[in-house]
Image 1: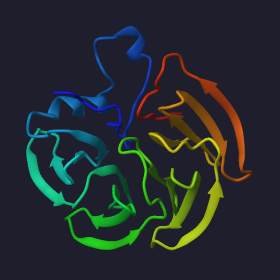
Image 2 (image 1 turned 45 degrees about the vertical axis):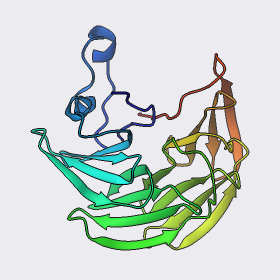
Image 3 (image 1 turned 180 degrees about the vertical axis):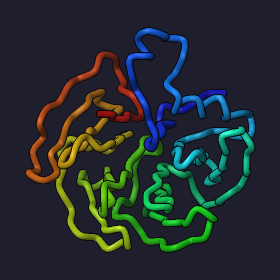
Image 4 (image 1 turned 60 degrees about the vertical axis):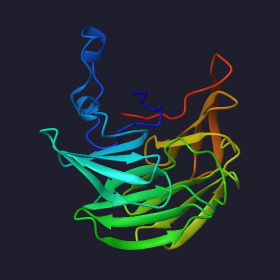
Length: 219
């Protein structure tokens, strides 16, 4: 089974020196990958929260896997592909592919709390595009090359033009209080963007014709 590059956990992620000293052993928080069996066809994104891993699939299904590997198939079912799942304050924030994209908020029991249309009207399929920081939600809008910020109730608070966001596969992850890392599949590059000042702090081009589908940032 192929694991898409967008399959990156956010919560409880640990990256340490054990990667250098024991290259054959992944960090503890990455061991959830061993829980992905043939029941998780076409996984796109994953999020680990309070010992539970939520796996979003290309068919719109979200499965739930506990620490013992017990799988709750079809925990949630959306009409289109689940691009990103993030957990915060006992709620799941989900970005769904579509025209336009949609953002859904569920509680941990699977009850829908709120849902609304995201400003992105078309774009790439893969790449984590949503993250939550304190009381705000940051969502990439690849079509309009901007970062859209909502409060946790879904109210749009501001749009920030971001030239580092490409209309192809683009992924975002937080990097400190005021910055975000933006990974571009084509052209292959990684940028650091300060959303407080609106400046691209730096851009690094990657070798090869295409870059990664996704990225994560720790520490």
